[in-house]
Length: 85
Image (cartoon, rainbow, N blue to C red):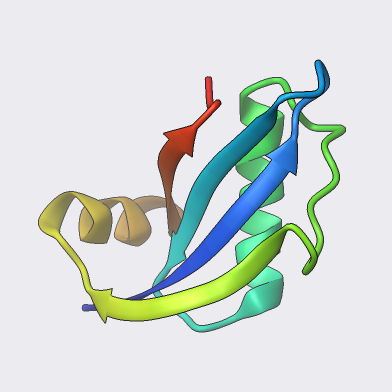
């Protein structure tokens, strides 16, 4: 499965920056933003601003098995990088 990685930097409610990748099975920027917002809401950061300024397409690659499984189940995978709960 080919996956598409969207590099994302979002300000948390307390002001620190959360860096994470939104990984999808479709190269669709709007869906990546929707998935990122869904995840932010699930971690208590639903008010964080996430637009094309915060979330940008990075690259496409083959999917490791756990990422492919998550995409099949939820449509996306979040790779936490820095400052994420």
